[in-house]
Image (cartoon, helix red, strand yellow):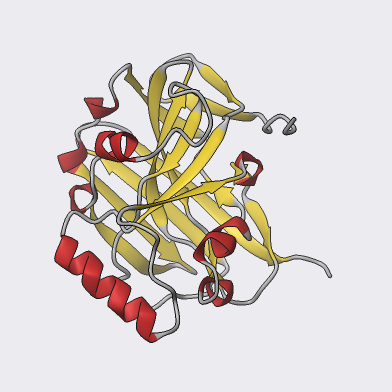
Length: 227
């Protein structure tokens, strides 16, 4: 039997409500851009630097929920890790919530094994979430904006509308051996890098801005893990 997932405490924006999450599944979706031609071009660019193509488009990477954290500091093993801002869909007891997170990844390991590169790093998420109710479509996806800074420099910014809707991702992904309604954390994909290159920075700031609503944010720092 697998050990229980760690409990994450999240606060629901605009409500006197706290979520204590112990999700059964953590899934990171990749290659989720709506523009299929742009996805194909991106896969070709990555292949040119040695990153293998994904098993499917979109791709879904099942990871250990123990990687999830709201801590302001994460430990990484290598010098070539980097983050990227992502909308994060949470399913808890049949209800959906939206948070912001970072699919922090080991870029050196990524050239050999994408799944292993994602599993090599913690997955930071915001300690605040927005309630969507029973319908993951409740968020106005067309009016969400995501942004990321690394070491105080702009790194990513753009509309979430560039990405497939989380409801579509839910429909495409398998149950992964868990009940179809099991508690889940789903990273929904990311935006192009403003400079077109990964930056192995130290201080990361994430934002997910909702039109007419609250802004979700999270900041974290990376430290090298002791040998």
